[in-house]
Image 1: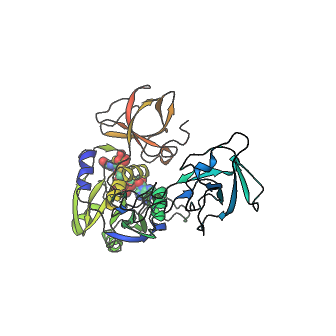
Image 2: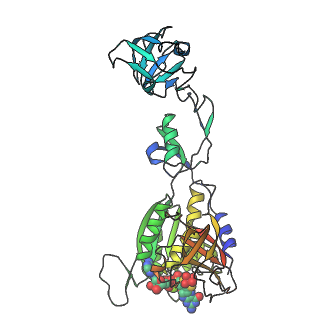
Image 3: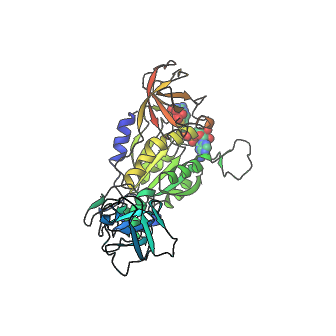
Length: 408
Ligand SMILES: Nc1nc2c(c(=O)[nH]1)N[C@H]1C(S)=C(S)[C@@H](COP(=O)(O)OP(=O)(O)OC[C@H]3O[C@@H](n4cnc5c(N)ncnc54)[C@H](O)[C@@H]3O)O[C@H]1N2
Ligand code: MOO
Ligand SMILES: [Mg+2]
């Protein structure tokens, strides 16, 4: 059995980023930018007003002894329009937020600091002196022409999409989304809409993996369940030749009907089999043809956890990410972990911030067939190899799968 670190290193050495494609901006969320984004225009494109008010010469706002300066209002410039004349000394123009500052004006006073006769009146009194540049958002203040805004390799989130839209990137070059074939195996496994028959169970793994693949930004394709025969596996694998990754669940341990490895040997190769971990010991990795195959264990928790530890990093690397792993932090274990296995144990737990530290509570029975141990889980506690017992109050490393929303 190899270590988790060695398994991950050997897997990732076989994975290269997928080609670049151009996608419409609204399909780019979660993908990785494949080229630098350089601003081709200044943003804002023009000096514009930050406030609804009046554009004027700052010198006209100097307060006098007896009464506030009174200026002639010569017109209005609304957002989306350009003033058709300049602001002269002794005059002002109404201006709306976002509107281009008219020539001649060097400042904007917000309407709350003025007195006027209403939107149609032709005068305004300036109740406070304003400096040059006041309430003006100068052209290029956010992005300058020629400036590098988003380097290639950036993961595109909603806010990056906003910046790309600002710069007019209606489509964007990204590393292509991975296509993932998902295959269940086992004569005991039936479709989830079927009534249970004696000895049968539902194909929960394929649906869990489909959702986990989607969450990793990739495109899952469930290929159903292969029977426990090499013919059935061969037939299913023949449907997966265009996939970028094949995920199987089940049939990788030492049972008489554990045939996934047989097909890997026949149609590709096995890089390794069995990892010194729990859950997830019988993981196999190799290729079918040139397509990488990650053979996950049948036990549902094993499938879920080993996808998280190996499947997700594969998809991250295929899709061009440089950060492949979830963050790891130190947590204090509230309820302890009585360890049996000598293998490294990934314990499902809920971690939250409490009294100035991250505190973990395990999610109950940790059997690799106990699906409810996955519920409420937002972290995997790492109990080191060697059958280490973790007492309440001990600290361990935890892989944070999701951050607690109630981090209060
Ligand atoms: N003598 C030994 N037996 C087992 C060993 C071992 O080292 N020596 N390893 C155990 C460990 S650890 C695991 S994990 C399992 C994994 O074995 P397989 O990958 O071959 O999984 P299967 O035998 O096909 O199924 C295991 C279990 O999971 C259920 N299953 C299978 N597919 C699905 C599915 N799509 N959805 C839901 N549940 C599924 C299956 O019915 C079995 O109950 O091997 C141990 N055995
Ligand atoms: O690897 Mo198994 O998942 O320990 O049950
Ligand atoms: Mg088996």
